[in-house]
Image (cartoon, rainbow over all chains, first blue to last red):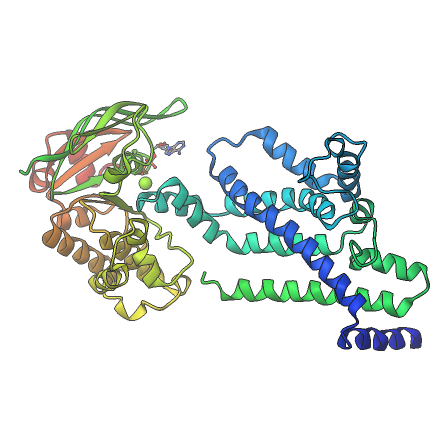
Length: 235
Length: 243
Ligand SMILES: Nc1ncnc2c1ncn2[C@@H]1O[C@H](COP(=O)(O)OP(=O)(O)O)[C@@H](O)[C@H]1O
Ligand SMILES: [Mg+2]
């Protein structure tokens, strides 16, 4: 117990002294998670709304979505690894815009694949939960299909925010896939979770705990934001 | 009477094998209030959805001011926007009362949405609630806001689907007065579905009785109530029809 308290003290000291290594790791984690979440949301939210407004949803698309959500992230990581490695299908093309393995961009690809089905599926279910009477009313007021999509998304917004915050929490706490495609390179692709694994393995519990503490704070901040957004909306 | 705005011809609407509406002929004129009465399940709401171009007919066509709506041809946005519906449940959006009322104008990208919404709220006597959240309203207030939202866009045709079915008498009178005043000022046509024959008497120029998807009788209000031609109308008006 004393160990834990000491370590927590050390953790807070590292944080408030702006330890460059620790803050570098936080920066990479945030950049990876937020970019992957942004890409997933920009494509996934409109797709979820569109699917929710189809009179007949293609079954294969829904099935694909739930399969995507069910794949263990480390398997997604493995797929990305195989595709990007220089002997792999895509990597062997050596095209300039295809990211190399062991880069933040490679991690972003794996993480986007992880978050995308989640964002689409949760957007879809929030949109389906909007009262059909509201949809009919919005059309009766003269909305175009696009305006209807915007209105339904607005009505479903708390569910969509849950999807995004949940997606962020999943991304920031992902280990396996990130380890595989990122390689945990110090100062480059090391993120909070892979650093925890490393520091713990080396017996540096104070640093490991400091990192764990940051993960908790970020998750808490995400949920705080969520709670705020949910209470500030009319309805 | 004024020139017809709607001309329905051979309009059939089926859901699966169930025929919801079969209207051989119906004209609706500019500026008239047509009350649509009939038992539950008669097809009244389905007919209104057809008149608002929300669902296409299975066959037949609805002509609206020279434009045709049928199974193959959706109605153009510009025409659709001349018509709106107030439903039995207000279906307000999760925003303030004022934004709800301005919503139809904003969809149309029209200038002065805010002040026109304020005018519409005044028409239903709710100017003091402009800033409230829609979820905080009572049932009667919410329905008056829904009416204000429809009036704000100054529709040429206002469709009302039992808008006062669950309301107390004071709110019923307020809604009737606001609709009739708007009609007087703007000359819009109204098709008003109601369960309440006394209401049909108060508001309508003509009354139509619908049974099992078909129009049994369409007549000027006075005639409909005092000298119906169809025995089923007489039974309905006399309260002998169980529904
Ligand atoms: N979307 C729908 N799908 C299937 N059946 C429907 C649908 N809408 C209406 N119906 C059926 O059409 C008939 C007429 O319904 P409706 O127009 O709601 O009647 P009313 O408004 O007069 O009570 C009913 O039998 C109803 O079950
Ligand atoms: Mg009905």
